[in-house]
Image (cartoon, rainbow, N blue to C red):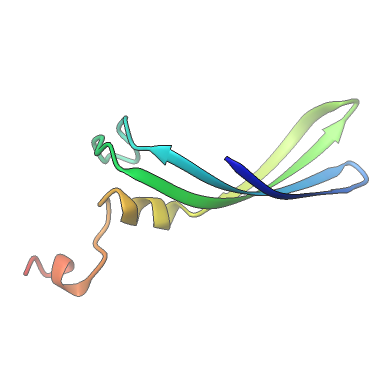
Length: 81
C-alpha cells in the first residue's frame, strides 16, 4: 500500500491510498489467477479515546474485477465472440 495523503479533522481521519496485491485466493467467486492487481481506496475513520470505532471504505471493486477477469471488459467478451 502506498499512502497518498491523510487528513485529520476532529475525530475523523481521511486516508487515500494505492494498493497492489496478487490474486492468490478466490475473490468474489473468481478462482485465483496469480495476477498482480492495483486499485485506489478512500477510507474514513472515526476515532474515539484513541481507537477506531467506525470506518467507511470505498475501493475500486470494478477495476479489481476487470483485472482478474471476473467481468467482461469488452462487447466481444459479453457476446462470446
